[in-house]
Length: 348
Image (cartoon, rainbow, N blue to C red; front, top):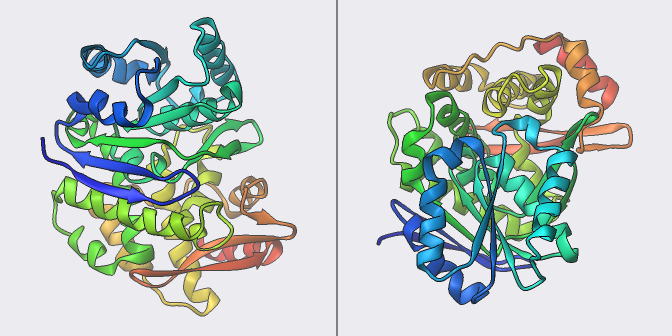
């Protein structure tokens, strides 16, 4: 079994294993870290049909007493009701403080699993097992956990690092094309913000999945180690997300995260030259279109502005946005909300 291991030094240090076909070794990855605890596997209805039996068989074969809780697939499950239902499930299963959660799914499952682990008995350990490209390169790494509330996306959450991330890239073979494409938006983001060489390689499809996932994880690891609690450089990871989250909210999440981020990156790129920075909007737009993204924003500037006023990145009367200085080099810019409104009217 071959895999790459990337180590993260944070408030809880942990390894990220990335390789093809490594899900079968999950129990052996867990044992040195957690011992013979009980495991509560959280997954969604899509993943459960494909791999639910397999993960339970692997954990049982490794000697673990594991129970499983399945939520409906989709962003709508990333809510308080689902969170409380899973917490009640763990309580009914009589999990103790020495037991652990295994978040087996995409970003929704990973966020819910991490947040529930941070809350149950004031904190139990958890393992991330991402099944989508998006979760592998982004949400499973770095310890951000959250649910959505009606006021906005990810407004209730915690910083809570996992004990282990196990990324089996073979699980991505069964992803629908649009779900895989969602992850590609995050991959392109990493190239734009911090690695022009990675960005250049993405023009050739298909890319080397293990190599690209590993490089994206390295970039996120380096950022998180510098700014675990999102008070500085970690904000660069939000390139495209400020506007993307607004678009998701306006669509009631009918526009997927990756599609929304793609649209948000284009808005940010168009805004950059108006703020005295470079103009890479046409180049970025062409790459996103090559990957099959619809980069048009279906909402007006005023609608996007109103939706982003509840964004977590708002500090008083200012909102931080990430704008490109060049391919592979982005910067955080704090803009007064009224100025941001004027800029949006020029680029949407």
